[in-house]
Amino acid sequence: MSGRVTVLTGGIGGAKLVLGLCRAMSADEVTAIVNTGDDFVHLGLAVSPDIDTLLYTLAGKSNPVQGWGRAEETWSFMEAVRSLGGEDWFALGDGDLALHVLRTQRLREGHLPSAIVADFASAWGISATMLPMSNDTVTTRVVTSEGELDFQHYFVKRRCAPSVRSIHVVGAETARAAPWVVESLLDEDSRAILIAPSNPFLSIDPILAVPEIRRALSETRVPVVAVSPIVAGDSVKGPTAKIMRELGFEVRVDVIAQHYAGLIDGLLVDERDPPAVLDVAQARVDTLMKTLDDRVRVARAALDFADSLRR
Amino acid sequence: MSGRVTVLTGGIGGAKLVLGLCRAMSADEVTAIVNTGDDFVHLGLAVSPDIDTLLYTLAGKSNPVQGWGRAEETWSFMEAVRSLGGEDWFALGDGDLALHVLRTQRLREGHLPSAIVADFASAWGISATMLPMSNDTVTTRVVTSEGELDFQHYFVKRRCAPSVRSIHVVGAETARAAPWVVESLLDEDSRAILIAPSNPFLSIDPILAVPEIRRALSETRVPVVAVSPIVAGDSVKGPTAKIMRELGFEVRVDVIAQHYAGLIDGLLVDERDPPAVLDVAQARVDTLMKTLDDRVRVARAALDFADSLRR
Image (cartoon, rainbow over the protein chains, first blue to last red):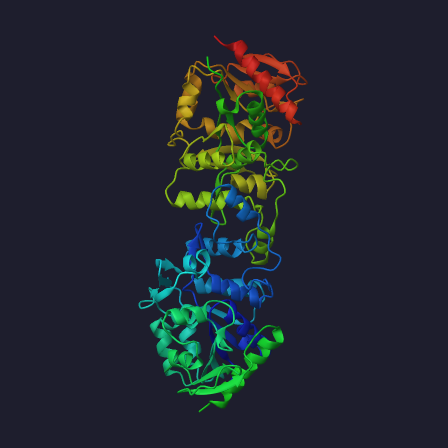
């Protein structure tokens, strides 16, 4: 067995676990398969929020307070956009623009998203392998009490206020997994596959909606462990608990286990959650990741748990 | 006779005269026809250097030291571009990016350059009418000792170091003048047409290379006065004198008058230049525009001179 670990992840919450993994083990053995369902074009620029959050987090450039964007960002661009009457509901920091402008330019030149993110990660000295889930356009759309909204419209412009009725992932059915995604999931020599504690509905489901990825995950012989996004009966940050309720679910770890049924071998549960009977194995630890030490500790717990599930 | 004045202009030097005009008379009677031969796409963004310099200058947002770009600019974007290995020879300030990003977005949506610049000017409270010379793509290329270069490659990347052999204006022959350009030049009720002291070869010739503009200027019954770009036998800033010598010309006002032969009725000459016999009328004043007062004074002198030439 190698030490290779593959992790399915969204943005802010997931990036914490991926950073913990990169410190808990050799970072060059970590492969992150990242949600691109949130990607959108804003002011003509191609924005990949989850990819970018992971880039900033792993490169040590992330804003530690807000969880997204860059540390020590400046905002001259947004101010000038506002003065020109441009759309200002989605904040693009001055330094942050570099990723969007260079990505847009390279996409227009015909480069693939997977090649672009690999080059960005390499330029910033990131040892982990970052893979977009797909090089095809896959778009998460949220059906709400206010109608069907683009993900960023729901998430940023409306701040998750509208009640969610259902979530579509447009384009997923025909999307191919990006190069190395399926290979890394089926690599029998790997130590573990993890599902980060990202929003299962908004951030992980779009990844699982790519047929090749779902199939590889259900077929792999490598232990698959999800880290529950529920901590002490609630979501840590972000709208997971709110969305679960709106979709008619109880905010309980057995609902999470049920959601990933057939795909995971175990669920890493927060020790503060009420005991629950699951159809898969479980381990209980403190899963709250406030400090870097927390992140390393939770990553280690997930890996140890996966090791214990090895057939 | 109305008070309307139309001025043909490039960027930095020309913008000084246009600002002077806007203070010397009612700004809403000033129409600037601006060179777009320097326009180029950089990092996938549509950049219009002369249009932007004029926007910043007339909106009171220009950097008073460097002559281009915005006052109190920040540079987080360029720093991040550099960290990602992107091209950094052309400096795009953070706030400056707003013009390029919004312009690029609107061009992709099918808006015309003339409509975009009108909206930008309006958003920033500019009363003067700003017209790009053409809505078609016209590209100034410089044949040098180092081969044929894009304008910005020659001007910014190589800092005008290569010796100029000739200048092409690609696309000019088939370009149409933008709406209102010809109308404003032929408006018999106007007070004057001015040619700003911009580089005649790099900044004014591309405007004159648009057949409709050259024809309108040669046919108009309105007095046409050029302000000489030569001050005390040299160019003030920028490479006018250097380029004249490289093209085999003497740096003399009679060469400027000859260059505009058939198009101008008079040349406003710097009083420090040696006396010269010209084929057109001349007036001699201090044409150096360091302060705002200088700019207003030179604008007034050009207008008075034009008035004196009225047939």
